[in-house]
Image (cartoon, rainbow, N blue to C red; front, top):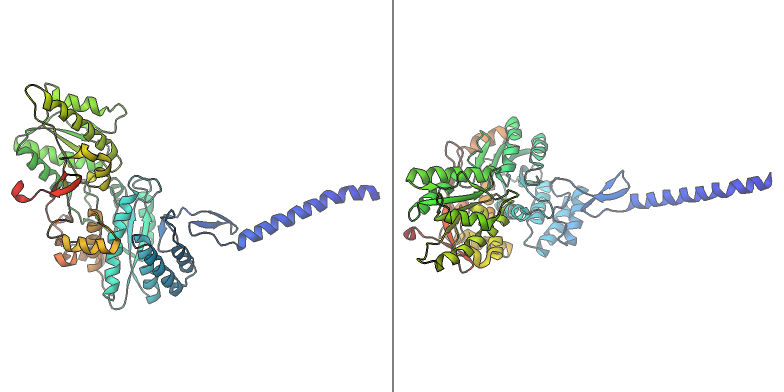
Length: 478
């Protein structure tokens, strides 16, 4: 009997020891503080935080090392806003180029002050996403407007809180919009980045009568009583390109994504205006940049040599996710132009033109000499006399030149700020947005007023890539 008890006691003791170890590990994990990019699961383990919405309680740019930011987020999570203010201020000083920490700093100030006005901004922020940098550019404009509102002491002592939301460009746009509309504190939304994402989200905002103003979505197919635009639509861009092209060239071919609201929008406007003037779009309606069989070398050759084509201009209208394909197409056009020059007799080059999706530093760096001479229609350019003051001020703030997305996002936020009052509601913001009028000194350089269709008044600006830089085509050159 004694031997039997000894035999059974050993595994029981071992099991008990293992249990103690497991419990000990659980307690240890439970006491552990998770990094800001992680959260507790079951109150014990730290797992990746995939939250899509943050006021200052989570990180979207975790690849940026900033200890002060991480500590500030923990303080914000605990409701210790005074400590969060101090830490976020240090985080801003450590990285002045990061708009996320500046927004969180001002959010902590707004929370401590009490009764903040709350707006949301929706941008694509997934890691390794092509247009993630677009999201950061938009956040800079929003952060700059929020900071300016604070420096002017807000409105009757109340400051502005910005909710940042990640819509993965399109995949989660509807889901994010639904979450934002449930939060009754949110009075208006800046976003979304792409026309695809905006189209998916608009019905949700309409149900909640929540105003949404986009600083980057240009598709003419976006039309809704709650939707406003702080950027020129494709109506302006397409017509400007058509009129410029027709002055010297009568045949054009279009490269675009047929499944993109943006690509289809600018293609339709360009085609209608170009044909109205007397031009011809060959190989209609477009050549699909995104087709699995797309071969830029063959398609460019067909556009130049085919008897029913012989285009003199190539319009590149990629959406934000097919810009690399468009840049590769520009390379083939440049190569083809070299051949055209050597023919006997020499043939005119195929002129390249594009919409604002190619107005990026990536176009210059990736395209190199292959995009020299490319004409682009854009909503804002930092070198114009109207924009220079804002551009220079912003460059000092962010430590480098800003993009048009930063400028128009600043304007969009300014428009919503203009509607705020002590008794602001979603209804009053939506109503007052229609009558907003901002002078050039209140925006990124150009006055902001909306048409009866809630479109921004104004004209597109034409640029040309020369010597690896964007250069304005002045009215006298048109």
